[in-house]
Length: 159
Image (cartoon, rainbow, N blue to C red; front, side):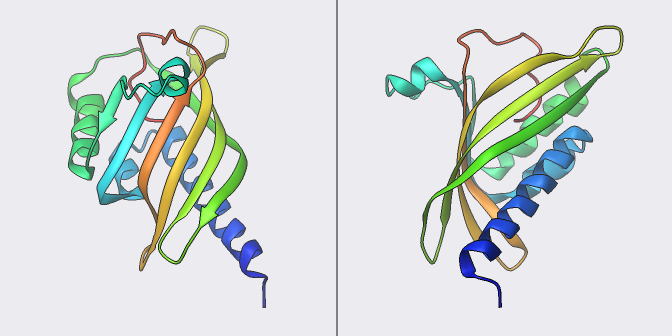
């Protein structure tokens, strides 16, 4: 029998591998399925985070709002063709209980336009709260704190 911590680590690694594959493949309609119906997704600059300011550049307070975000990406936004690669590393379990696991990790999003070299698009830390469900782990909260105060105007996709 696998040690409980090792089993948890393998499950979380699998969850985040599926999460980043969904983003890399542009399967935006599948992205909200990683979240509970009652969830919180936030994207904010590090300066706001360290000063305890709650001002986010993206705030979704339910799966319905995530679905609205997907509709905006797929139905109303116009942007040039690009490839995105998402990396999650340094995954740490900060706390765990019967009902939830809180994790911290680094994220990196690399963007490649068809006619330009690849560039780091966004980097930072993610603070997640996951809960076990019959269908596997689901995010109840995801806070992405990006390192720079400046964001490229093409920030249109999830992290």
